[in-house]
Image 1 (spheres, rainbow, N blue to C red):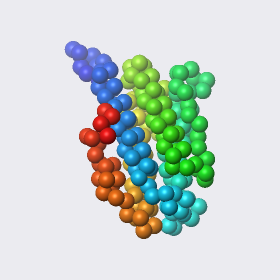
Image 2: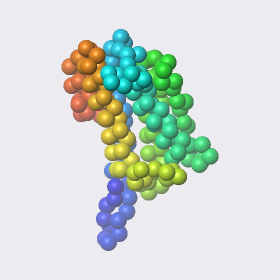
Image 3: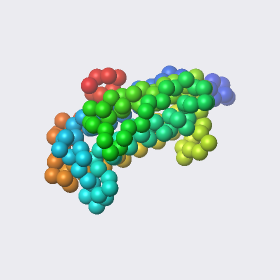
Image 4: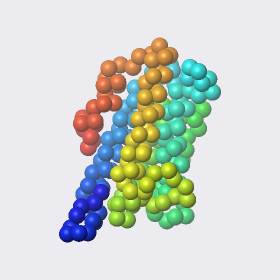
Length: 182
C-alpha cells in the first residue's frame, strides 16, 4: 500500500503491517473451521470425488502455504523464513493439522514482514499467478482459503453433518477473531 508524498508514491509500512493482521485473522478463521469439523467425517470421501476426503481438502491448505513459502521465501533465497514441513494428506489428524496450520500461518506472516521490509513486495518466485505486492498477496491467499473453507462446509453438510452455528457463524466473525480476540 502506498501513500502520496508530493508527487511521489511511497510504501506505507503501517498499512502493510495491517495486512499481516488481516492474514492472521484469516488463518484463525481457517483454524476455527478445521477445529470444528466433526471427527467422524475427517476421513470421509467427498461426494462425487471419492479420492478426496475432508482431511485432504483441509491438509491442502497447509501444504499450499508450504509450497508458496518454498517458492517465495525460503530455501536458498536467504529470506530467513523457516518453512514448516508438509503434512501427509492421507494420514494427518485434526490435531496434527491444527499444529501445522499454526506454524504455516506464522511463516506466511514472517514472509509478509519480509515484504514490508522490501518496500511492500514479497520476493518473486520463478512462477506465480499474482502480483508480488502485499495487498494482492493477502487477497490471493485469503481467497484460496475461503474457497476451501466453503468446500469443507458444503461437504460436511452433504455428509449429513451440518456444522453448528458457532462454526458457520464464527467463520464470519472476523471482528471477534481479529488481533487475537477469539
